[in-house]
Length: 603
Image (tube, rainbow, N blue to C red; front, side, top):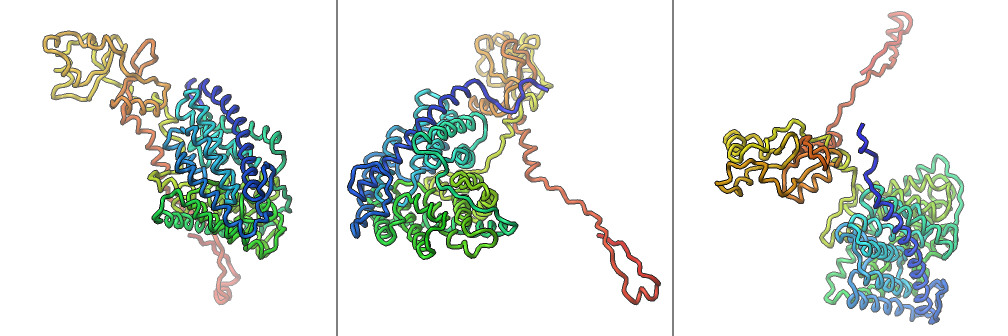
């Protein structure tokens, strides 16, 4: 058992990143609180013509027909900010964060950190049917990225802090720290290692403890339902099978509408204003669909609305949210999905088997979120933390899992990754442990190595090792077992003819060779081979003695992949089992042969 082989690969830098993540979580919490107050400010300004940061729903406005113009004004302002400020503020936040993580080295500019919350507050405050979580995730991510850039961290460490800031913002909005961590694991990190998980968990914990100081404590939508009986599993499965097609329909329709906007013969700066026209019309006929709508979500979960009202809210919300989001304005998708899912659950509740009707809006809400975002565990825990309803946790998980399974089978991409794919990037969301990461050099290296004595002359080496009977492309050069360098045929092209009689070791006196250590992972060595453009590297005992132990080549580094291939592709045949069963003789046989006998048969 080797002392350097452990469960995780980490170093003291993790402590520094974790400390920075705690600061990032606190700053993101304050920024999220500021954004919520900014939304309230613009809501009061647009709908009530008052200067106030009090939480007023736009549904109580008395503007009459003039309410149609309010979202259009907000859309015009957002379009101008995007055109003359930064185009990166367009969208609903999470896809932009993923794109920055995977394709932008986790760098977000200060301009985006300032303009994104401003544009989102104007869009939502003017009645945009969006949630605040997407912009807050982008803003919190920008804060984490900027802090990481200030400390000149690596791209991988910068990613951890970007995600830590993003999910700290989500924790502030909803009070769901565990679900925020799961959001990071299922959607944003694309890895699971202490370097990323620990900073994210610390940032969410800091945000969770800081939130009550700013926004109060307790679940956002307190709820208590009775436990479901055995039929609850059937009902949860049905809820998932309804939410799955709903997720498919919403995502597919959204991008078809977006394609229609792309065909318009006008600059995209004007699209948010055009998309806001249906928002204003829908808000005139159904004011409850304007803005974030947390009050409406709470009423749906508590079954305080009549069915006709719920149907109207769901239909109008779907239409205006889809058109507005496709127009390229700024706003999140989580809150609209919560409202749509809870509304469908309220409509279906009287017909669902098992359990009281009050539980089904909550279950459908989680199922819609899990199917749409393809994050079933996050969706179930998120719904649980939003309500504090422990009795619903198991059906929440079942419904979200079924909806997730449906979308995996029938949707190539989710609402989040489709936007990134349309920008020319492909995201593969399955990930597992890299076989090169879990194997070390001493597991795969070649130990029986043919070496060349450093005292041999260059002419002798060229004749004996690189002639017609050459076995290998390169050889380690050693002096009493101590590595001097690696020699291949290209070296002799640089040796003048008059120096061919010199010992080979003299040509390696200046530069130390590239080496590998037995405790290094295959992944780190493979990366160095790719960067240096070489095929093999000698393995030495340590960097002081340079005693040669073996050699590791690209061929050796692919050995760990064999076991992965076997696990995924080699299928074992089931053994046929003898199952005894008893058959009864026919009545005529019983009469002819005496008393009935049972016979054991099998297959």
